[in-house]
Length: 466
Image 1 (cartoon, rainbow, N blue to C red):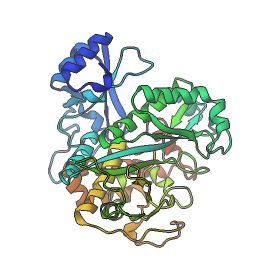
Image 2: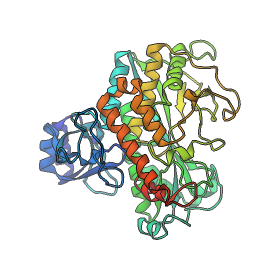
Image 3: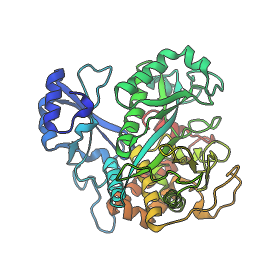
């Protein structure tokens, strides 16, 4: 039985018996997009696949540095977790169809999991949006593109250097370089082979402009599966790098000297008969549903910004002239806008959301994108005229500008009626509080920080884990 064909507990048992697995790795994506998990003995794991198992809910009660959130209670209601609850186990469901073999861990497959309650779980939050999209008669395909820097460093060396004067994997500005990829082909093929063996095959892998920066485009798939692939890709790219005495960095912007690192999302819709909704019927016209989707992105993505720009560092990337958008503009094949309409054949016409950084939680970034788009379809929102040429100098109203910092983004999200209708009050309250916590932690240290635009606080907090 192929591991990617597992559908239920019985399939899982047959597979584990066939490959003689004694231990299984289980992982759940936390609120920051970090995979948290453990090894489980096959006997306990098999019991868990039949119902569920308990996982300490502290993984949704601490930040990316394992510091416990200290929130005030909201409107007299209990928070999701905290000292007031004693950090109990939450029921977690194993996702059999998410199973992958890890190429360098013999007979030890990895399975993704999600909270059974689903209230603050990123994967379940995306599923909630997908269910609403399905109720309108649509389903989505998507694909993630990631830029990441490689360094000739280790977790020990970056800390010893206090994240300064780091040794990039390769020198110079070598975008789309055949020289670099051929000299280091062994590493490139390790990444390509790992992605293929873990069913997250890459459509392309190449150098970007910057010392040691690569871009990987994961092949398109059904929306939920594509987010699974993105979550696994980020973690296991870091793993393969560290196994080669390198470090892979997915911060939005680790240095002010170079463009930031994006996490672009390509989106298309299908109807229930698998027909592409965004396909033009005549000439090069963009169909109404695609325009409404873009209109929803324009109207709502500002107030959902913390779902694609979730860290203090995210907002350093969203600046003029650095291949990142600064406003909610759109255009045809325009890489200076937030939303790029890509015209092509019926199966390839799509929308690229260019707002997100590589630091975003893929489930939440995709949930925000699809959520804003479906509201556009529901409300038949027409977008502004497409931008021709550069979008950085276009004057737009404040409601079409990206927020200036994480604190502003968190406040917009907390007040967003659209967010509450899409994701539920508990998720909005919890996630807004976690982003406020993140921003306040930075503010507490700000007076002690150096004047560099990218602070050591950001580097030490996000460099390895995000």
